[in-house]
Length: 126
Picture (cartoon, rainbow, N blue to C red):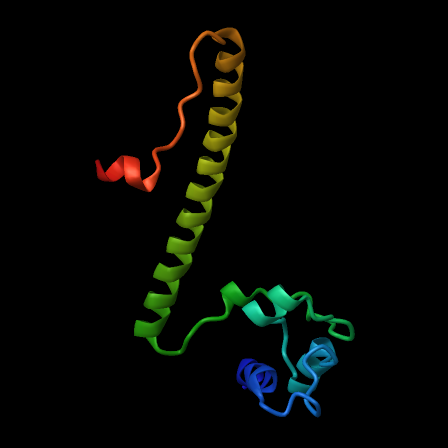
């Protein structure tokens, strides 16, 4: 309901009354009783203030289980997939930083080679 409200507020045609820049997301989230702010592109892009919002501490949302065993299994699989994805991203970040450092060192030692450039659209067509 919170995300829908924010999107409707943003896209409303009567922007004179519903000013997007004046919307206080933090206080609105507290009014909805949210435990944490959802990640929304509207908030990230426009950098609305989240003042007045105090996230709840001490609750581990990953530990809350479903009563339904089937849904709990699905949740566990999603958690494992997320963890694997995070680990893979960390590995790739490390590899990318190493790859960036290595070509720079080789470029300085072998300056006789001309720099290769990407082909333009016309060059690729021929």
